[in-house]
Length: 426
Image (tube, rainbow, N blue to C red):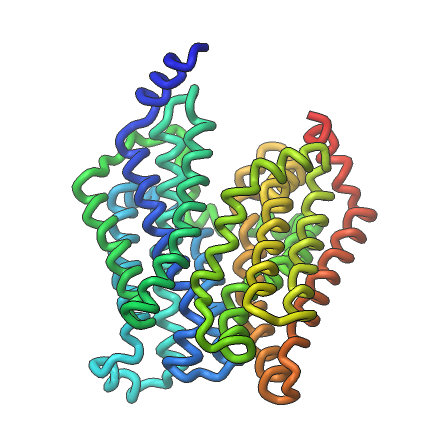
């Protein structure tokens, strides 16, 4: 096929809805990661939560998205993509606005009427309602809005949009924090997704119904029981939660640690841009170098690399070693992430791959909740009680090394390498 013919296929192969949905994904991810990048500092320094509560609340924000997403597909299919997307962006714009308004004077009566921790926790749950509907809509539109001959390219475009938004979010948060104030970071996030609410209403048209519809909420619950009945799979998910406990510290406790113990003027949001930037720049190279490594071995290696990254910061805590640690965590993410999903698809019984893949992100949510609770308590104990804050990173690394060791034991007992051997030789 000539280049001009392939270019023509690309021009003709995607519906307008495909482009509207995927471009909106950039702004949704931008809004989410802008808010996430500033959230811990906002809670700790503006709303004056102690480190332990800051960790728990930030973990709630990052974790509940992944639990709600289990049911998001069923809800999006019931509403239709256009209504679900527009509703999701409207919810997100209101949620981010409320987060940025938690310290505002007009919220004072509400702050006085209910415990502040409960109020903040409730408001931090709201973005999960929106994000849980965005994901299935955009992924579903990528499938339905692209022809068969360009569908693989369509998914590549989707993942590229996600990474662009993930890199742009911390950058925008940095600019807004420095020039407008940290509360305005969340207002910028709200404006970003509200613009997408308008764009969806004007430009987006629902595609035709797919032959395969998303499962209902009742069927989703049945699927959960099916997955829970596979102990091999559940043990793996439980073990792999440790990876995400380690990973999420870059958003949960690293910002607080840097401001409290390294530099109170450090541009933490800009530093957090490192992760997505490394993923964008190095994914192809890392995947090429490790292409012959079996799927499960890649999961083990990625977990080990991300865990050891925090030793760099523990040994020599500076702004630049923090940036280096984030970069190394990102390399571990590149190594394990695609192979993790490959392994799960191999582990699932025949005909149940879709069900199993739907629950593959549960460790991400559980890891954020546990990571928030653990990170907050480590920051309090080592940073505020014994005054040896760098020790918290040794503990976080220890969690990662324990996870790596348990994965190795799992590898020896379950022998998942036998299942991904064909993929390794392909």
